[in-house]
Length: 95
Image (cartoon, rainbow, N blue to C red; front, side, top):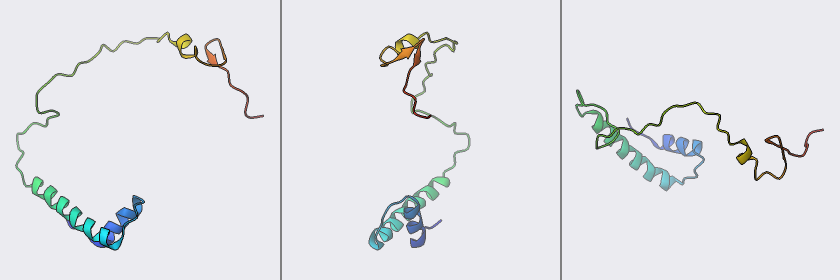
């Protein structure tokens, strides 16, 4: 796959990045280099290779999945200027 100048300008416009002609030409070369590297990676034989998330095997620490009420309503509204029965009171903005 190869990127042409029109594609670079279109991507820059979609990303809302202003690029000059010289910058677009330079970016075209850089993007083609990156795509060439990705094409080289597709040639590697990975049959039988397990996907990994880390270079060292480790188990994730998991907490118990318990349902709780939270019981934090009073703490949450403690700093509110006005509250009533654990609800925030705000001025009416719509008539």
